[in-house]
Length: 247
Image (cartoon, rainbow, N blue to C red; front, side):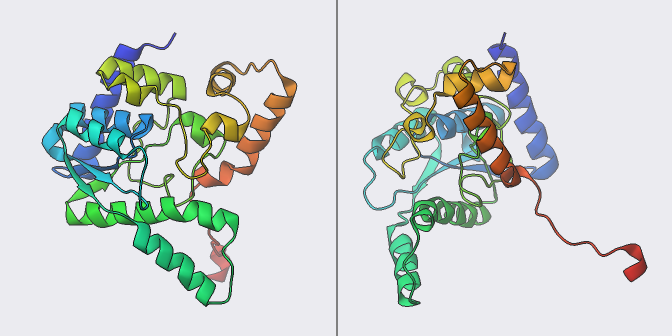
């Protein structure tokens, strides 16, 4: 059984130890989407480092229908926060591709915003003596449900070892507002919920990850395939290394 109290305590200590070794005195910089993962990662960082060392960055792409959720989170935690609208950079990038004589693919359009957000996060981080928090969880990483060099990037990943259900338990334990913890998960890009988009529930995925049990063979095959074809996203950058006799 998941021991939320002990896991949360260990997570907080892990963040403290990581910063002691990799950024003593630095700030945790987090992209605040208004969803569960960024909200809970921010809350963990506040517990570990204190609210004065946690900075939230809100990055709407033009108008964001749920921007109030992001504002609610930073107000709840009492953390410094900045808003940087990526709309102009987004539009200009697409326009530059078209000006080069190409029509951006659907995937290019879908993944551009999260990549611009990560670029923005690192610009803020280097301005604010920060370290960027990755907010992906184990369930999403398992099936590759992230944008390479977008939300999959970061300097440290507090919840990357926890399934969606476990992340929710940590959020409830920390007292993060219920509407943020239990908000229907969505990538904010496609207009669909995560579960509608991937074709199965996180409950089914989490059970399979932790127990190896999946009652539906078709779903099991789909999860295995997604895990296999997206495994490269979590591996270090491959590179050619010449043999010793050639050097």
